[in-house]
Length: 258
Image (cartoon, rainbow, N blue to C red):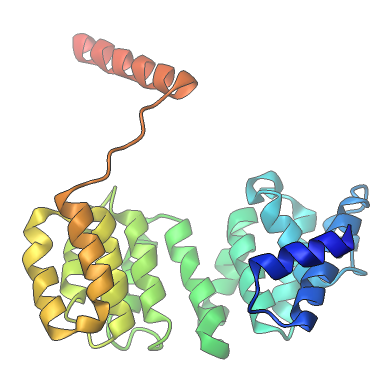
């Protein structure tokens, strides 16, 4: 089985060196062993590498651990004690989904934490997009502004602002303004946001950016294509369609009652 797994990994990742392939196999085997000890709480699995436990938590759907004190305690311990930047970043993103209150208490400290590629600060910014409130929206606007946070972390604030477009449509105007930002990564993420939420009136601004910064041409072309020719949404089937019909009837009843 391990031999077949190694061959499969070499096929999927031909550029990887042998020791990296073996590392993937090691983590795969650890995950198998992890699931063989389900009766133990997450926080008691100290004999497993932290990366493996985080892999399992993510792959097993975070909603299954919502408000689980054991998982929350484990994640907070990783954030407080682990020396690996990426483990801390992954643990915080998981904590936001598992225990919002605990994540809120740690967000300010993590925003002040330096790390490779600013991965920890970026993970902290995801809190403001995952917990949708007016206060967090205002905080994201502060972070995305020039000087609001570090150069590498600002683009993540753009990504998190996309989660407010539905409730705050004027957020799209912010993305248009960001096309003139000094940071190419901010500009690129703004283009990607317009790819999903832009309108035909934004084509001119995208063309202006393309003329100034050809390096983002691929993202601009993709955004213009989706704006001009929006992809068709897949037809709803089964329970989802029935739910939509019920909601439509309820809306009709509400109109009659008014």
